[in-house]
Length: 304
Image 1 (cartoon, rainbow, N blue to C red):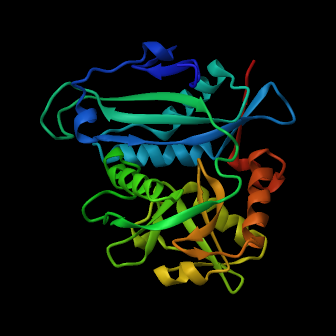
Image 2 (cartoon, rainbow, N blue to C red):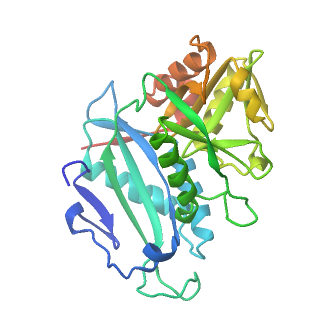
């Protein structure tokens, strides 16, 4: 357990992580009837007695919305309260990641979400500020992104991540770092667990929410930042062929932040990623609470 934060929230109380255990008969383990979140935090660079969380309210609201797909009412403000206390009890000294998860906690074998107990836990782990500082190579996955008509893609349901897992492993085992999934219409959707942007003719372009993507919070942040600093943005379908001729391609998400794509399949992309670098520096400044305009995106938690 040394790679995780020492305290977890489990079954309505804070306990040592090693005591937070579930049965092998837990319903969610068998049917993917769970909804997850993920957010980052850092020790405040200006005050080591404080911790900074990025867009806590938005993350909690998305998780609360995801819970509705499980027929479960968990208010966003309750999630936020628990996460704040979770951070205070752990007082992380390095950059870290928080994983809250809602799941069907009863022991049973019938796939359903009605007349079944649900529960909520939170744990965390240290996570480097940048996972791929040198950028990534990507392949076009043979797996397609699910459609919202068959899977609730506006939420982060655990069942939908089987496609992400298959695509990620396929990419890594064929010599790439990441996978890019197309949707059922053959348009670019997203990476295995990240949204995607391209730059063409000085415009920042990303698939719209109608393209069966996850409504990413980092994605939303980047669009707002870009518009604020005068970068033209477009939300529209992206053809696979556009990836090969783009001026820049980058992935974004809570874990990846902004990560440049160096190569898609056998097409090498320009190394001069001007717009991605501008946005990356701006996002870092915001998460470190150095941008007064975006202070409402930062939750400050005292470790005392």
